[in-house]
Amino acid sequence: MWQVLVAALLGLFLCPVDAMSQALAQGVIRLDPVVTRGLEQPLFLTHAGDGAGRLFVLEQPGRDRIIQNNRLLPAPFLDITSMAD
Figure 1 (cartoon, helix red, strand yellow):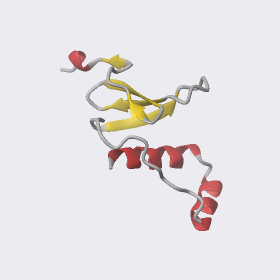
Figure 2 (cartoon, rainbow, N blue to C red):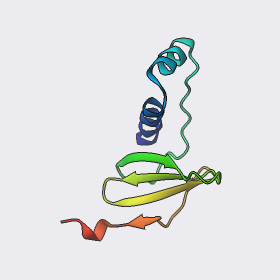
Figure 3 (cartoon, rainbow, N blue to C red):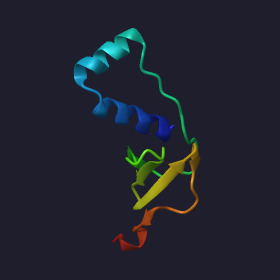
């Protein structure tokens, strides 16, 4: 459920308002879940920007997770959970 919400929010922020409204009216926007479990309170989603197709998901506890080939990798890219107060 969180993954769908993250994908929806990402789409809303990256799309110009007029284009978003038009796409919604035409039924063009479609949400496809990529990962359905394993994430803890995701806050932000972005792509790697290198054409590799990787996605980075920031989790609230302080981990940056990687989704590659529609799979959540077991080891986080970055883990700063130990720095929490």
